[in-house]
Length: 269
Image 1 (cartoon, one colour):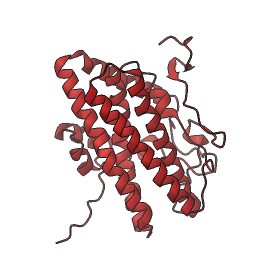
Image 2: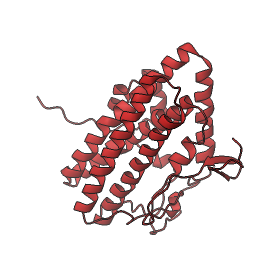
Image 3: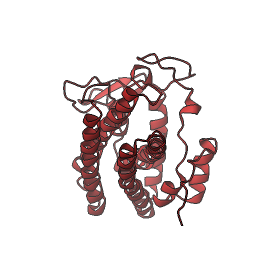
């Protein structure tokens, strides 16, 4: 990618996409140290979590929509999946914003990030983008949201937990269609697998510019940040299976997460 092209910027040796526009009320940051994550179950921490995920869903709208716009020659079925995803993510923004207001919050109350867009949309091919956004970031979000729903339910906030569970139902399909289309495209052109692998390597290198390196540092509100390995969410195996990850892939994801899985919910007779 030519750094002199309009729409890109550089961090170290990494070229990223210029971030999407945000309302003036939002302060955009891209480092955990600049965020306002409180790390507890206080009222303000709950609002910040919902606000953060609202902002992430806004970024997901941008990523899915720009793929439709920038890859007009992609297979029609894949373009339709991306268009539906943009619609789903927009609905998620609305329900999260509604819940935020119910808890006394407002948009712009906390810093937000567009980093996922900046990294994903710096990739110049569609297989690479859905490998990053859907198969990696959205799949990771399923793990995060699943854990958060359990936490909210444990403190008696079933309304927020139900909302998060509902969002995760949509996310399964967003990950699943990427898995299906990557396989389908690779069958007709094996080079697509090389593009996917290159995109994931790029994501790893780009993300390293912003990650916490050691842990123990404090963020903008004085909360101590955990080390990188402790920030890996527990793996939601059921949702990964529903999204059509293979058993070998799930085993590798579990290995990387230290074999931590979400505690299965109790089954009723």
